[in-house]
Image (cartoon, rainbow, N blue to C red; front, side, top):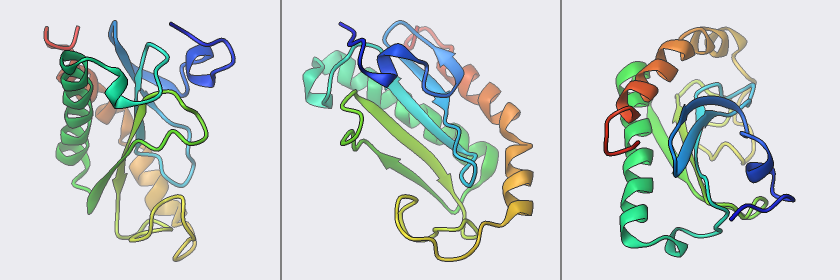
Length: 146
């Protein structure tokens, strides 16, 4: 159930953090938002309601595990969750740690910037992401996700 024209079927979509049979977690390559993760469903479906109840629960449990790892590792001001899929109609959730210093906060990261990018803060956050990736992978390496 893959679509060769879909970028999330053809490519990981970022730095692979965790791979299970039914989903993967990647760290997106968003320079101003280094703690931007995606939970990407493996099968090419557009909507959460395309999944059966068990798979919906698995998908949301994975989203929650990524959110919790971000909260524990980074203590962000807020974690944003989004499943837009307007540009890429392949089920994926954005899980983004947000900070009161980020260039768009409190606006959505797809909105207008509120201030210039704080390169020092972004670099300090980026330096911590290997540990965040490890925490996400550990949280998802339990039998209910594999």
